[in-house]
Length: 279
Image (cartoon, rainbow, N blue to C red; front, side, top):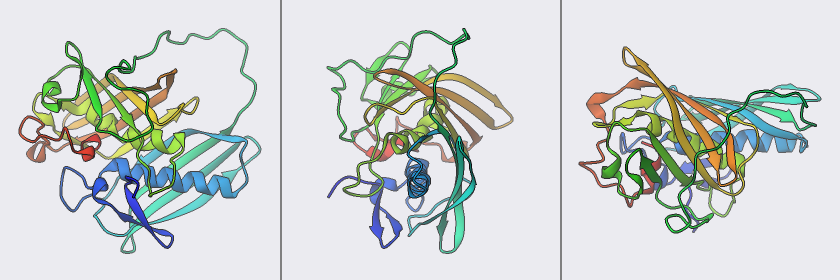
């Protein structure tokens, strides 16, 4: 059976062990939830026959701990026009909503011709000898300033800026995830990249916002921390999203302090646990 976050039961999703969070044995992590929501949004746009549209902005609210029980996704088209489509999706468990998402899909067209400032360069993925190109999911790789790419999670438990390199995991077995679903699920790791410090991960994210100027090539996605602001237990972290071809867009997450239940990678060895992609 293909490694996946869920198995299908009719039109519903049953969490697999890979969806289990490190915060609690009976809690799903945001990587799995985000993947399920992005998949639902994308399927709705496909049902509309809008193959002229591309996902450009995706926002998730994680407002209730999602348990390791059956999930039902529903969607609603908020607005469909000639150049855009706005769709909402919700994940429900036992009749109660636990997470929601909004996806903005835009029509592809000719680029504008005027000169406008844009950063040059891009974060670099791991070299081929460290991470050969693949579509097969593996334990996430991280780097932090002064250390470089290292599979040991304990080596990166420090206060330095971090980057991660991950492969998108299928939402359900035998269904190849699209580039959008891969990017949407990996984007939840924005919290880990921006909130992992010397004491472990001491914040839990309440949302994700992903912006994409283009889709990734393949299923490998990188996140590079570019900003973090904290005050009174609230943290806002921003990353650049990239692949082997360069920058794709950005991701932003808002998180609240959760220090009493921090995930300490010096105490626990998660280097062989794929769940470590989403605390």
